[in-house]
Image (tube, rainbow, N blue to C red; front, side):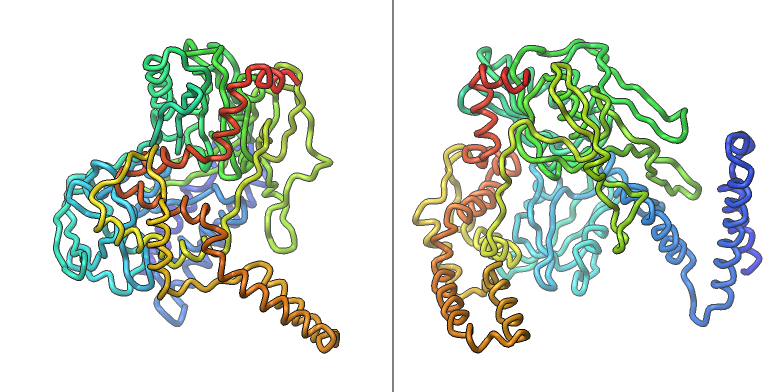
Length: 551
């Protein structure tokens, strides 16, 4: 066995050793350091396996070692063993082999959260709220969300047997797994003011084509369309070429969109638009937020640099790093950061410097002193080093402590389970609203439920009490602090009324997804969405729109 380990580890060393071609470009001392440290690691690994007091799992130990090494670089450089290939497909292509349903964990129980429309789970009649008791005869007791999700995934065309519980009765479903491809455009349609709208969730395969198809359809069906909104909020990115092709919808052929630069010159690229555009005149607004990253930022940033769209929302994430997926031995792969990208003005929007860490080991932000000003096509000033700053900022809305608690304790989800049993149908997404009757019924449902929570004010009062005691001021201040605490308790009792609008939106979203799937939930939210309403306002005001792009 020892001999086998030595042979395997030496094979790993030879595999990782720089090739003759690579050595011609690598300084001799660096090449020697690489070889030396690989030999040291191999010896440590072999010695540990042979001599450690307990059995050591070679695969698990190596995975931890690799993960720790890569974690010292950036969060995007990741090793994938063969067992994680389904996760790789999901990240890069939006595809995986499975039944097509979201699940979640409540205490020690696993439930179906949302079956995707027309996919195997939906066709088999699974509903949100169904409890998963077993997968292929193996109980889910003691299993977490990840365990059950992994058990349900597998090669397309194979069967998985689920034992489920609904309304206290158990039943089984044999479901044939399919190649699940998540829709990157969950909804497109027309908004008030004759404004077209498309939501793009991910830059997976054919993202640009799907947006183009939706845009062309909206123009064909609505000849007087006055403007277009591209919603990239919460879009974490994906394939860079899809971003280039998406920008191409609105800018001329042959325009430089993104350039990548890295240590290995052969990986440096310049990507240009390669097709005739669909429309270079229609006013465009792009919605972004702090979760818009990577390919989303290439799209929004390029359209901003070329003065082709007004950017609305809040500052984007700031990921200006490019990854390549490289095959390794034994069917494993590695996603590795190989370069930074630069958009048409020449700026890189990377916000964190992973080569420098603070005292807690966190990557540091690019300091203001190192941020550089660049110019858009019309001469507007934009900056590198901190994501894409919107042209029109809309202050993000933060969920109240009460609403967070209702979500985390699954009171919204569980109430809607009961609502669906009592209502066979509801109004279309654009018309459905939470009536007084529904909201009062929800409040009644909560009457015997635990939804206790602490506000920021309560936390601060507790800190004040503790500090006052430490500094011997509490005796003088105790009555005032107690009065404030009592007043706060009284105010909290009215929070279901105070936050009715916010809670109603959450109820509405959960109800709509049960009847009209993800697209219905999104459609129903657009009527009151602050960023969408601001974008519509700007697109309808041609003078303001043009002034923004010519500042």
